[in-house]
Image: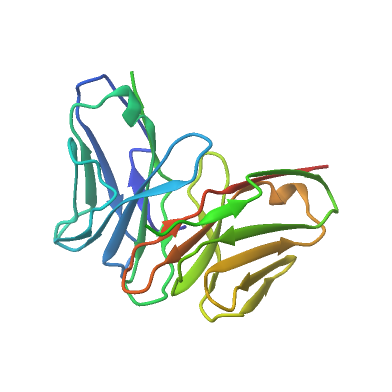
Length: 114
Length: 111
């Protein structure tokens, strides 16, 4: 998973605040995925983006969550008005977008809502 | 909705034993990946299988993709404590680039 950079690694927010999670994909990758992982569980797909496009957001909660991947800069997962249930590890993965290519993961951002 | 069910969910074995982890679905996948995740880290890709019936070996790990491309298995020979971790399978359904992850198998190898 070397090359996919997520920051911050740990983020603490009070209920009602906003959380911004950043993901810089591997060099040469233009496709980004965001996943959420609760303790002791697997990964749940949230959203799949290409540069400037949301391809599939079927896993995103309908309210408070948004994602973007601008032409320049990292992909951002934004959670507004956080609640305790948003506490989780959020992982970003990137790929080249070619069929059957692998996705490589970052080390995740652990969000704690207090 | 495509689902990937992994079994067993938890597995605790002694060093030197063999084990098999299964990843099953009622849906077809274009390819299937296996990852290992250690606490506090992101998943690390182990292997990708693409062709139905394909078998890949990675040292003591053997991966197989089912003939119908709906299931896969991971076999570890002579497990070592360093194999301890969460093993995840993931597949991309035809026509999408979305990776669906399995429920995970937590493996603990005791010295």
